Image 1 (cartoon, rainbow, N blue to C red):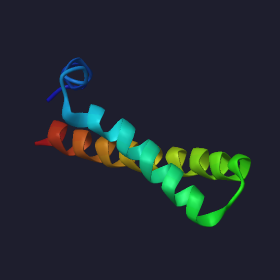
Image 2 (cartoon, rainbow, N blue to C red):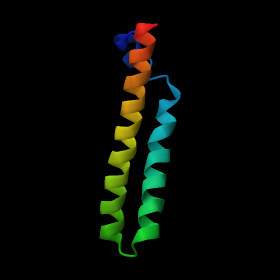
Image 3 (cartoon, helix red, strand yellow):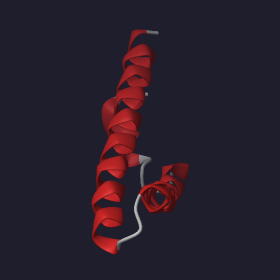
Image 4 (tube, helix red, strand yellow):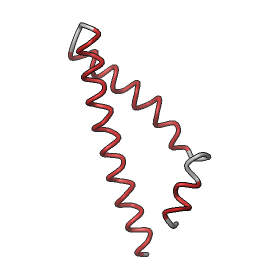
Length: 69
């Protein structure tokens, strides 16, 4: 699958399910570490960035492998 096709299928992809999942996981993880709202939201933001970054790296690796094969 080429890169333009990858972005074209984003709108109908199951990757949209990852958005509420990332938000939920980040908020719950932040709430287990802190009790006040501001630290929870700060921790949730950092966790969400980490998860999205990790997912982007995995997608980049998979796209690179699919272009080679």
